[in-house]
Length: 300
Image (cartoon, rainbow, N blue to C red):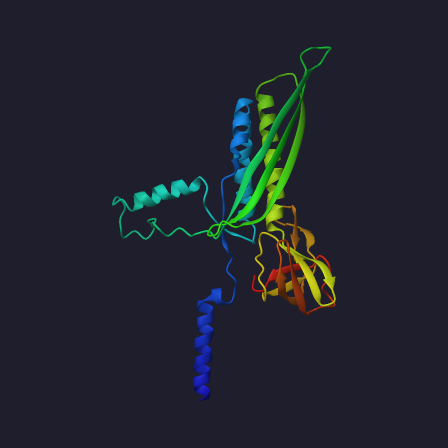
């Protein structure tokens, strides 16, 4: 009997190693739709002769946002942007009969992963204003002040039901001044920097919003109220791990500051889910759970 129990234990251990997904919660696959301008805005910008300027900002925002989100531990992204077309062309070529069928490196069709959710970013306002003044004494030195205003609407869509989760509007403004004896290439570089800067600022705002973890808003006795965030799906009966509030530490690789979770301080279980918040009962660590503690689903 002991030998049988030992064998069953060994078999179970190997099964658990072979199927780690049983132990760890799999990240939900997510896609980021290409950044687009609202149709009415696109028409208005074209009439103002600013189509090229807005396109530069949108293209820069598209790349910077994807790079920022793809490196986050919160998401597993699948490609739905311009690179998808390149991959589909390669898949079609690999299956056209022109590629060795026995080549294991050949691309396979109909194996692209699906996306349960899709983030969409639609630009609803773009204002580009330049104020150019000449030096009254020399008449040659120009002082250019250029302002860019950008407003976007961010949504998360369920790709099956088309349910919209927690839409949010964001704004960014950037202003630069340059004094130059020469107009032309110097001003062109100045403009490019302005476009990149406002795109980077907006990408950071969106990324910070989408990757922000759920936190304890209120604690009353053994009950806590938690804010709902795009990266976490809550359900009644769901088990949660609670961590001490995040700490800001320098990233040794990039030199930039980053937020990291504190130590685990307790556990809780969801009892109610509302549109913008959820409530949970504390199961352990009630004396250490406080406002701003980080909340994550267990096995996250």
